[in-house]
Amino acid sequence: MKRVPWDQRIARAIVPLIARTPVTPNHLTATGLVLAFVAAGLFASGHGILANWAAGVFVFSRFLDHFDGELARLKGVASRFGYYFDYLTGALSYAALFLGIGLGLSKGDLGSWAIALGAAAMAAALITMGLDMHIDRFNAKLNGPKTAGERDAASYPGYGGFEIEDGIYLLAPITWLGFLTPFYVLACVGASIFCAWTLAVLVRLRRKGARDLAATPRN
Image: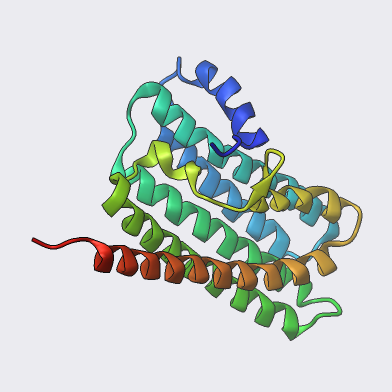
């Protein structure tokens, strides 16, 4: 069994307190999306101090992403709408981040390259969302459909309680230390690589499914 990531463990410890309130999983998902847009707007200003605030806000919005699924499980209100809403929120959050940082950095040394990199990373984030949903639909044929409460159980590469997507938490300290530009370039490249990896996973699953179907005895 895959080890539960540390951020998800923290969310599980805090969520019981939230469960006593009228807050719903979709409220948390929407809040995370709004915070991501706020962070993108602050980054787009190109102002150093605002960028520092933006980094903290965005990191918190992504950490909050682990709360909606846990709350849905605890309250027993997991839904297909919440599942799709969570997927869309994640993709739009990263797309907004790349756009915001790109606009902000375009006023510096990177110039128009910052916007070009951001556009490529935005496309990669949205395409990855579509690929992930195809993977889930493929797996649903074998294991049943997922709900909002199961969204964060996606099979991302990870080790020692950390997943590859947890690298976004480095955005805050790196921005505060003044290394946003190189981090942004690497993140844009990484988004494209991750998109390619997700496509490879989907292709591999489809091939495996085709082989299993061909090997199934027919009456």
